[in-house]
Length: 379
Ligand SMILES: *Cc1c(COP(=O)(O)O)cnc(C)c1O
Image 1 (tube, rainbow, N blue to C red):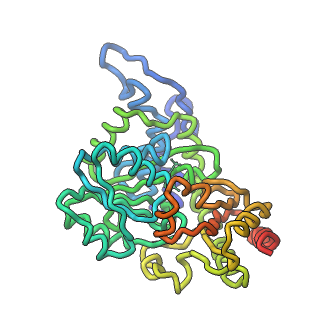
Image 2 (cartoon, protein in one colour; image 1 turned 180 degrees about the vertical axis):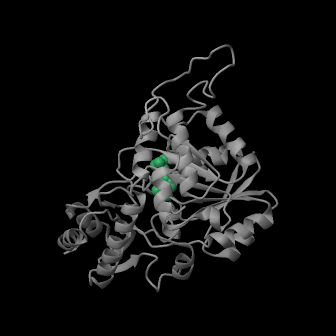
Image 3 (cartoon, rainbow, N blue to C red; image 1 turned 30 degrees about the horizontal axis):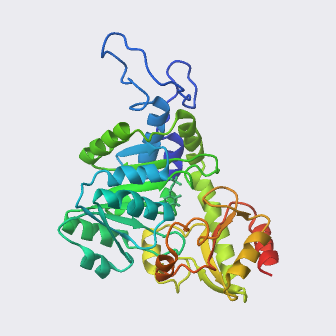
């Protein structure tokens, strides 16, 4: 079945008692049992909830996975993956990571004895060189937030396999519409469903998708033991969001192309980070593993000062100044002081994230209006 059909029908059976076409929001904490331990597969809502189950089936379907698991946020999903590991284990991860992932790894898990090695994962040889006998996990984001670096997922999968490690890909930026890491050999896909999957900036949620039954049991055990599960109302919202993922992504991609090209032609813009450009270092790999280039674009101004970046950031009207991305409305963000402020400045600059960098999440409004807005703000 093709994606557009799957995302509308996956996990959806008419409600057996009423015929309701949408899954009800099962707002309940527990389920009545007929006799001790005799029940309908539902005991307690931290472990099972029918609304969550429908969403988890949809999650699996859209990433061509056997299993999906829903978490109360993207970082809670990431947290569950790291809890597969033990003290002494090493994780090799992309150096240009979402700030909250970096904070979770270095500020929470390092003190439990898990070691994180940050490398440029767009360089396969650098990843191979970082492997040690205790490497248990490769954690890759592609495209990266906010510098839009591209990592070759199939190459990472081969490296992980040779080391007996798992490969987990944070697929938030691409969404399942543009990229399916499991098809390229990844073991686990992680999404901040807060972004493109929810799509309407009204919910915080995370997802894991995977193929292996054994790994699914381990992650389900962590999900119910640690308890970072989303409520049924939030599951319902994400389910509804997913139904239009393909339509929204088509428009995000169309608007993304228009705006990336407009920025590139603007004399006040020094550099545009967008993998759709042929001179982007990851363009060939991006073209081979993605079906489009999405609506995330970062750029630097010719006037490379914090003041000028601040001026532009305060001058946009349609692009709202906010963290987050992937919603129907366009957002503008200043990574150095907002989403990536938790990464020390020296570390940011080492990775090429300058204080003047501006990140756009291009929404699905009319592209002409978005360009007019950028024109009046950049001047
Ligand atoms: C937002 C985001 C996360 C974290 O997800 P939350 O839902 O905010 O917890 C992880 N990775 C990427 C790439 C993100 O953009």
